[in-house]
Structure formats: structure tokens, C-alpha cells
Amino acid sequence: MLKRGSSGDDVARLQTRLTAVGFDAGGADGIFGPKTEAALRAFQEANGLAVDGIAGPATNGKLAELQAAALEKLSNVADDDDGGGMEGDRDAAVAMSLVLVAISLGVLVTLRRRWWGAL
Image (cartoon, rainbow, N blue to C red; front, side):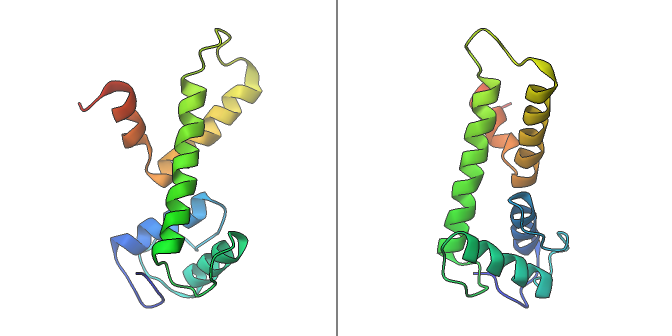
């Protein structure tokens, strides 16, 4: 469980994930300070979770759920099998947005493994 005063790589990952889903944690410096706590509380409130400012199982589960949803959307774009492919600037912008979210959430490795197996 991460809370104000925690520090390290797990906090940096939390900050990155919060920012990726629209809650500005003030950067990924690995220090759980007031900006991270405010972002976490806002995330918890927006997602119907107990607003305690602690990244425990329920909060981490919701973040993981959103990460999985982003992965699924990215996979669906890449697996477009209707023969039409991606066309135009709008589709390219959507795809780029999804890639940026995937990078932020750390899902590209998972996606690469799904498509090409372990390298």
C-alpha cells in the first residue's frame, strides 16, 4: 500500500498511471507528496472508491482495470480485420493517443508479447 510519505519506483509507477488516466500527480518523481495524494483522492472519488488517499487493493485494482481497457482498445485498433484498415487523420490520431496511453501505462510489452510472443 502506498500513501503520503512513501517513495520509490512503485510510487513513480503510480504517478505515471494516475497521469495517464487524467489525474495530474505532478510528475513521476517517486515521492508520494501532496500532488500525488490530491491526484489519487480525485481518482478515487471519480471512480466510486473510498477516498482515503491510499493506493491499496481497490485503487490498484481500478487502475489495473483501466490499464486492461486501454490495452484492449489498442489491441482492437491494431487487429482491425474489417479490411478497411485505419484511414485518415482521425484514425491516426486515435491510434497515436492509444499508443501514448499504452506507453504511460506500461502495456506495450504485454501487447508485443500477445502479438509476437517472447523475443
